[in-house]
Image (cartoon, rainbow, N blue to C red; front, side, top):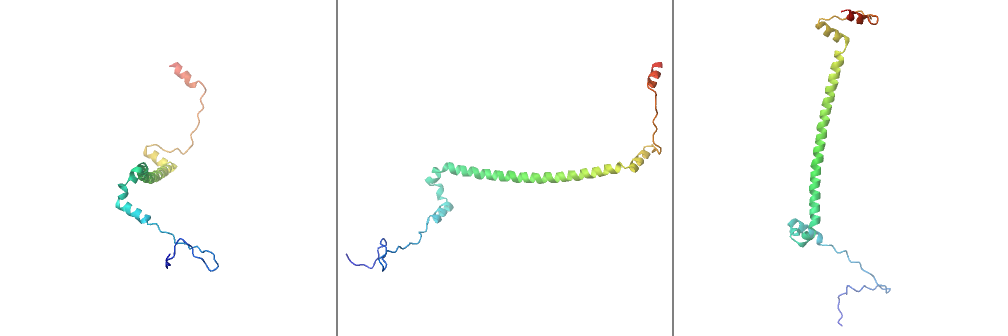
Length: 145
């Protein structure tokens, strides 16, 4: 054997006390991540056997994306409809309050008296009197006719 200056990488170096030292090699960086990104951007993954092999999963993902888009539109329209109905409810509530206020105003005695005078009637200043009639008073008169 010839002596060489090369160190065999499989053999651990020996320290002065005779114990072997282990060298830790730096972790190997995978070059696959950049390669995968390049395949995706170039579209090479679409023509390989991997797409056909996982076609059902890819179709499932496409279905999920379409369902997600549909749900987003549905919820946006629902939120828009909710805001529209809330505005309509507020408008109807204010209209109700206005109508009730006008009704309360028209029910006041002074307003009722003015409306009665316009119809040609007069407001009574004395309370009405109760007239007591004997029982059968009206029956006798109708029988005599």
